[in-house]
Image 1 (tube, one colour):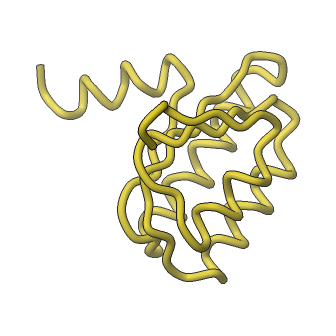
Image 2: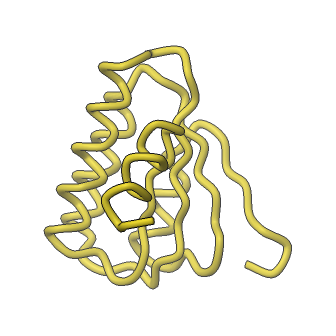
Length: 102
């Protein structure tokens, strides 16, 4: 299975991944993914899986704005670490969950 096939499968299941330090590319992909999922359906849940040490608070604020603008419910799931800007992004989600050892 190629990377593009994996990405398509994840996108169809309305799962977005925020991994590593938050950079421009990450912010663009998350905001675009939120908008695309919102266009597809405003009632189905979007899962935002977070494993990030944070990064630029300005870029994090863009993601927070996109989350608050979304009509679809967004569940933030911590799969590893959520520090700094990533933690603030998690707090803006409608529902917050974490793996037991996260």
